[in-house]
Image 1: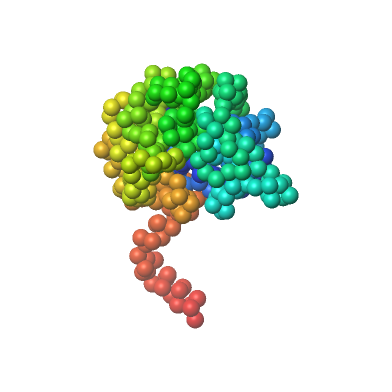
Image 2: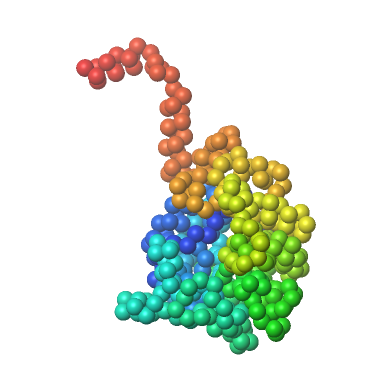
Length: 382
């Protein structure tokens, strides 16, 4: 992809960890991402990373809105690169989803009672003053200054991300966060240039794409994650996503990362069934109709399942999240399952050397070494 080469097409998908300190990573992120980097995957994303302090969901969310964040992220990325993987960052803004507790508390809204613990609720921003989830405050409808401020934040965070050693940047335009809030008629009730018809509702998303592509080096790729369809009862659909992808391609975006959900309404749009590979058809259609690279993500757990997606041309990359929490070295096991001659070759040499010895020992005949070996074992057992 441009000047960046990944050793395989396996992507560790962004997974929020809720262990950040005013946006900056801690030892938890170093452990978490270091563990994943040793497993042989091609591209390692950290987690959704806010471009503004108010753009976090929680006080524990990641951000790269301060210069002080850069050295801590670079330490992690240097280690990822040492393991042979490509470090990638996903930049986002929560919009109206701001001001809640972390996942372990089911994203419960912050209230005034939390202020005593240093967790005072704050007001999010959104295209319209419409609340999606329960929050202490309705979001502020963004004016032109707010829009410009967020666009400037994306530009500044691209530079910080580059300084921190990332090779890929992804714009998070999915899952009911700020960009998705502009796209969906459920959450965007504006009557200015940023609302109304699909062209108006896409304006902010495309302006973010333009800013990021302009700020990011020409020899490094830009990804864009979309919710291919809204959630249950939503309005934004796959036809809309195909139209958006055409416009993203025209703005030199390299790849569309096809997810779904995040905004719900009262239409007859059904919930996307959570079955194995449930979002692969979204990636396949966007790839086919727009002629742009795509990522397939969602309930991809098996090596042959992932390989079939690629061999059938349904997507260019496969992204895996929760399965990596269970098997951090999933990719090395996939290599073994798919018959790669040396499945340990993409692991750190400290691991690979010993694992190769282990494999050799497993194939050694029990009576190898003849009578002398057998006599030695008898002596030891006696």
